[in-house]
Structures are given as structure tokens and as C-alpha cells.
Length: 209
Image (cartoon, rainbow, N blue to C red; front, side, top):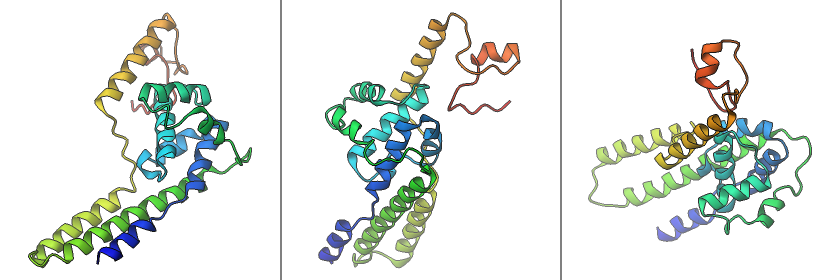
């Protein structure tokens, strides 16, 4: 049984080429960042370095900052991860990236691999639980249903952030508004009162009126 579980762990599905393509395409064209960030979470990336790079891009996007090698390096330093994703690694993300790419296909590849990995982990868990002789079958089935529901829910990107990140974003936005001297930071809506409250509509913001 242990050998079977180990074999499953060794062959975890992943598409690291697609992961790097996503990172490289975002660096070349920040306009596609929203599509990737809206459909993927850092945990969907198999490679630890790719995961960190995407986390930095995601943080920059939510701050309304541009994503380039310099801003990524600065963000990774704030995260205390500059050694894991050094400038050489960031520069390598451009390698082999075509000028015009359909990022949607890469996003789908990474999502599919992430879901398959979670399914493998579920299979490992089930093998361990089913081999326990003291577990009741009804209890096992209830737990299995719960795990399957969690796997299904994992297709929806978890956009929750930590309290530290929330405070950091708020302070950044307040500083930007202070530095702007009352000028709009985003696109005007044409509604003066709304523009004063929102400082314009900015990228990555969803506003329901």
C-alpha cells in the first residue's frame, strides 16, 4: 500500500511549461494579467518558484502597479522571497514566450493540472482511510462526499487575502490618494460625487452601484 501511495505522489500531474508561459505573457503584456489572476490562485502552480512569481504579480495587480522585472523584484523583497525568485529567474521567464499568445489556453492547462493533483491527493487520502479497519463505512462515505465537494469547489478561485495584505493594500491606496492631491487615480465615471468617493475606477476593482 505504501508503495502505491508513493508512486502516486511521484507522478503528480503538472504543466510547468504552461505555468512559465503564463508568467512570461503577463510580463510582456500586463493587459492579460486580469484573466490569469481572475481564474488562477497561487496554489494552482506546481513549481514553488512559479507560485511565488505569480503571487508577486497578483499582489502588484491588486495594488494597481505595473508588472515588470523591477516591480516584481521589489515586491518579492517585500515578501522576503527575493532569494527564491532572483533577477536571473525573472529574466528567464521571457525565454520562448511568443509575442502574441493566447493566455487562456495556458490558464486552462494549469487549472486542469491543479485539479488533477487534488484528485490524486484525494485518492491517497481515500486509500489510507479505507485501509483503517476501525472506520465505519458510513463515516467514510460522508467524509468522501465532503472531500469531493471540496474538490469541486476548488475550481472556483479563492480570492481571500490575509489581513496583512489587506492592510498593506489599504495603506498603499491611501498614500496614492494623498500623493495625487485630489486628482483622480482612475478613469472618471462622469458622476462627480462618485468620482470623489472612489477617486475614479481603477483596474482590478469591481464596483456595483
